[in-house]
Image: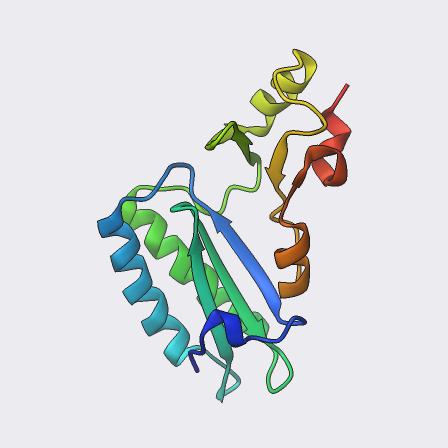
Length: 161
């Protein structure tokens, strides 16, 4: 069952998929339609899942699931991954590679491999105050409060000199 993302409780489980490039308006429109359709029919063991989503910064697909009524099962999580894989294929984008880092460089958002980010940290091209996207947040409250944080306050801090 699709609900507005803003109406999901703070404890809702969150999955963040970051694209390796900025999405076009047309792509975002299509992804919105496809994600609404998927979440409308998303179930776990026959029970409707109460879920919402948003697309942030023309780059991140954020799916939230209210687990108070029904939790995601292995099969329902597999279905969501297959859905994301279908978007990857359709738009020739990478959404599932967790070995990439996305961060602000001024007002722009950069996307680099983890190896490149490590090199940038070593060369001091990024600092402890560089705002990174911590896609390891697990619930909506963490997402709202700790998703865009200085690298020093995230797992990224281990790469800073």
